[in-house]
Length: 395
Image (cartoon, rainbow, N blue to C red):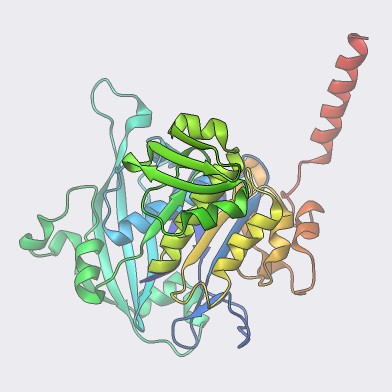
C-alpha cells in the first residue's frame, strides 16, 4: 500500500492552518528515472521526498504529521510510543485528516476527524491524546491522467463511500479503541497489506539486533571494526577490531568506543534495509546529522535505484543543508518549508516555483529566491552588531 497525498487542517504553525504534501510524481517521468516507482501508468510514487528549511520552520512537525497519517492508515494506536506526547498541542482545534492511498491499481480516499482528548486529571496539557470521532473510507475510480490527483475536491466528488466509522458493523468497531482507526482492519481486509513505517529521530539512534551482514555495513562507517554482535535487544555488544582487540560493552560503553556518526549511520542503514525489504516508508529527521555528505548520498541512492529498491520504498527526510538536495535530480520530490507572513510556515514544492531542472536547488534555497528559506538580512545584521558591541565591551 502506497501513500500518495496527505492533508491536515488546524495546524498552528502553517499558513491557513493547512499542512499538505504529495508523494506522487507530478512531473514528467522518463523511462530512465529509477527514483520513482510505477503504480500503473499514469501514476508513479516518488521514492525520495526531501523537506528543507531553516531552523524553526516546522520540519520535525512535518515528519511527525506524516507519521501520524501513516498510523491512521495502518490502524496503529495514535498514542503508541514514538510520537511526542505534545503533538496534539500543535493544533488550534480538532483537526481533520485526508489521505489518498494506492494498492494494486485501486485508489482509496480516507477522511478522518480527530479529537484532541483532554488530559487526565493531574496531567499536563502536553499529555493530551488523539481520539477518532468519525472516519470514512471511499473508493476513487480508476484515473486516466494525473490531473485528478491534484485536487481533493475532485477526488472527493468522484469517490464512492465504502465504510463509515459511526455506521460500521458492531463486530468491526469492537476491534478499534478510540485512538485506533478502522483503516487497519478495513484496508487489511480489502487490500491485504499495510504501509510499513520506520522512523529515525536524532535522539533515537539505536543499533538493532538481528540484522544480517552487520559487519560489512559497519565497516562503511568505521573500517577499524572487524565484527559486531548485538545481544539482549541492543543492550549488550561484542565488538572486535582489526588490531585483534575484543571488547564486551553495554550500549553506553559502545557509544564511548564508536563515533556518533558510526552509531547513527548503522542505525540508519538498518532501518533503510527493513524499509527497502517491505516497500514501506522511512522517516528520518535531519538526515545529515553526524554523517559526512558522501555517506548521506550513499543512503539516498539506495532508494533511487531499482536494484536496491524494487518494492518502491520511500525515504522522507528533513535537512538544514540544501547542498544535499543537489544530489536529487527530480524537482517534484523536494519541498521548501519557508517562513511566511506573521511567522507562519508555507510549504513550497520546488517544482512549482522553478522550471529549469539544471538549477542547483542549494543555490535557490540559499539565495532566498523563494522567500523565507534564509535568515532575514535585518536579523543577521542585528546579530552582527550585537556581537561586535559585546566584543568591544570586553576588550
